[in-house]
Amino acid sequence: DVAVFRTERIPRDHDGQVANSFNLHPDWTIEILSPKQSQTKVIRNILHCLDNGTNMGWLLDPEESLIFVYSADKSVQLFENLEVVLPVPEFAEAVQLKVGEIFDWLKE
Image (cartoon, rainbow, N blue to C red; front, side, top):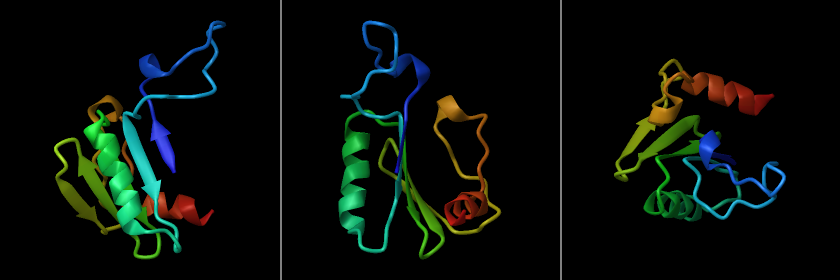
């Protein structure tokens, strides 16, 4: 799983180093469903993040080769065409990732 934070939101310690613990919501959460994991539990985690200020959540299902994208308004889109470029949060608009690229990385 991945939690993405905008640079200005990353907590720092008194020396200016990245803090050891983050007690705040990510700007973008990416959950990867494992075979033994409850999809409901993972969706609840994404919705909890969205309720607390996260901009976007992705749920990757490697077994089905599909990605659910949850927006801040909790609307959901399903992506399974491997050539489609996925939506990303505004702060990451320069990032262009295709569904197929994501699943290729998971195979490595």
